[in-house]
Every structure is written in structure tokens, then in C-alpha cells.
Amino acid sequence: MLYSACVADSPALFHQLLNSILWQQGYVTLYGKRHLIPRLQAWYGDPDAGYRYSGETLTPLPWTAELKQLKDELQTMTGLPLNSVLANLYRNGQDKMGWHADDETELGEQPQILSLSLGACRDFALRPKGASRQHSQVALTDGSLLWMKAGMQSRWQHALPARARVTTPRINLTFRLVNQ
Image 1 (spheres, rainbow, N blue to C red):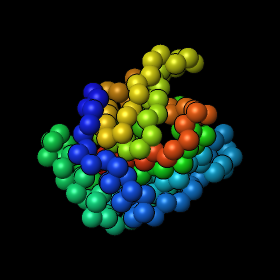
Image 2: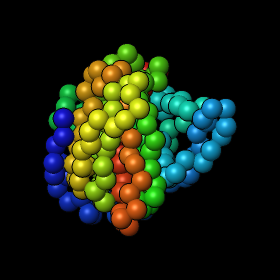
Image 3: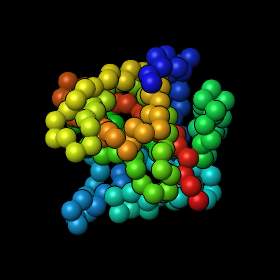
Image 4: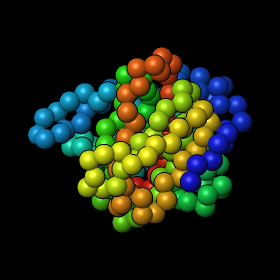
């Protein structure tokens, strides 16, 4: 489910987060090899909301005031319990995210993820699990919220493909509940 214009002053929030989040370039392990991820990221959350994916363990940084306020507002809006957020900074259209599903054990059997986009518009590509071709895509605009409901991670994969014509940055915040 996509909600447009979910954030009132998205340019101001974008700049606050760009400057307050402790961005770093993490690693993923694919087919036994460790690689730098093609974007910057940061993991924030409750103290016991550690997260493991692609061979890496992320220990949460304490909530910033802006991230905590967003989490609280999204919990009120959706009724979902949330205890963590993966912040991704796509510096330009060359930064990307490959095909995957957020189906790690600590997210539970039917995770729900709230994905808030700020900055440059980027395509969110979808394909059924087991498929090799893209099925569809959704343009994630500045200030939009994508609610990935229960069942999506078990049936679909998603990606954020590189886009050479995108020259401005995008911040994506994926709020979730990590089971301790």
C-alpha cells in the first residue's frame, strides 16, 4: 500500500536526517564473498533490536529525536509495533539495492515493514519469489510511505535498481519490528 505525501515538510526532514544520521558503508556477504554495499546505511533502534542479514550483524544506535518522532507517528498511524529502522542513503542513481526479501528469522513469520522515502524519486521493482524477471515497479516519490504488509516478504522480492539519470540523493527509512 502506497501513501503519497506522507511527510509534511519532507525537504527539511531530508536535510535534518542527512546531517544527523551516522552514515557508514556496510558490507554484505554474497556467495561466500564480502562486498561493500552500494549505498550508505545506519541501524537505529531499541537497545535489544540487533539485526542480522547477509552475514552481518547490526547493533542499533540510540534513536535520534527525528527518527524516534517518525517511529512514534508511524506506530500511531498504522497500529504496528516498531522497534528499529534501517536508514539507507542512496547518494545518486548509481547507489542501489539488489533483489531480496526481508525474511530474516528475527523479523518473524509475516513481517510488516514501513518504508519512508525522502529526496529523489526512485523505482521500487518487484518480482515473485523464484522468478528471474521484474514483474512491476512503483515510483517512490519524496515523502511517500510504502507499507509492505504481511505476506509480501514470503511471496515477493524487491530491488532498487541503479538509475543513471538520477543525480540527487534519496534517504529511505525502513521501520520494522525485530523480535528479540
